[in-house]
Length: 206
Image 1: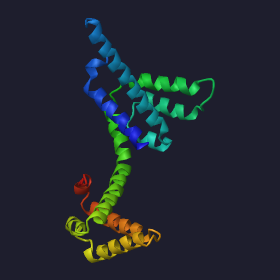
Image 2: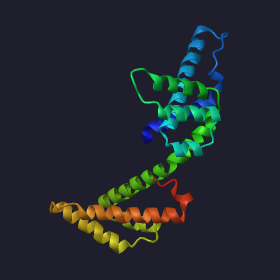
Image 3: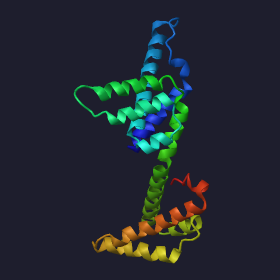
């Protein structure tokens, strides 16, 4: 779901940067006009995707968002229309798509990104802990690097967990310490984010 949201967001960002391509210019030659038509189609698909994201939100969240009244009503109505062979939901989504083309999508996109931000941060923290664990398994001296990056971490405890993890693996025991090592790393990463949120929004990549 997050990947789809990212793709939709990028599409809308492209839309915001290329508004001049939305309307087809009849003075262009056929090749240039074709490019404009392709861009317009991509923009329409992107706007429809944002409309789908809005409909997927809860009624409470939709009511708290800053949306044009007509668009808000259309989105709430879409939530009440069941999918059926009569196509009522499809027609409503097409209507939302038309409304989206009449408004500036940038503020709506910003609100959707803000709603997704907590999940993105949590995912980044999860991957960062995994990368540190893999790095330590490959090179035990990485513990010192982690302790410098996260001063509250106890290097001795990490060394013991790392040794136990390797021992479990060698003796084919359940990966209990493998999980404990991750949990310990993740705890320090989260704690530092709470103390220094700006710094940890862009974790180091190695």
